[in-house]
Image (tube, rainbow, N blue to C red):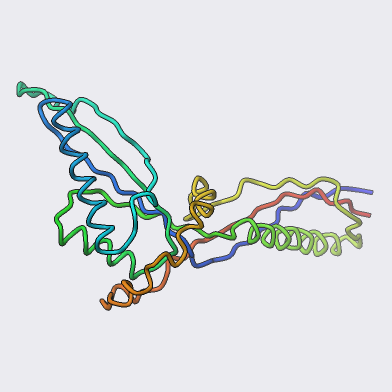
Length: 221
């Protein structure tokens, strides 16, 4: 009886069904208290307008960062400025219309805010289980083909190692976001989203590429 080590591979492209928005507000001034007051006022105005325009209440958002720091100004003799940051996030069902609506609000009300979208697949664990089976089958098929050339056959698995999942366009840190407040699925947004009719709001959801790799030592006889 011998052994043969063969890698297996499986991949799938899946449309994301959730998105985590991050909004980063930043203000600078010549004192910490002034920069904090300015950034807090901007965040407060943002939350008020978002609630007014969409019905999304402030409790949906999560605090990501509240911080102050000296503003880096190399080779400058000017008075030192201080920077204040307030970052918040929220998870919603993936919708091009919602993305369009939020960006339009930011433009209309002239918010100076950095926006980031993280695309999430809510049932990723089940998908990876399916990909694991396919990766094992891929390894077995390769092993059986190689063994047949020598007039031998595969008799079973000696050792199996699941290699690191390759999140090609998926952030592993976002896996738990699917549980946040039921991800606000359909949260009073249907009526307001019906009013969004731009071309960009009709685009399809982003595609996430999920990859599974295994390395299997097969018994050969």
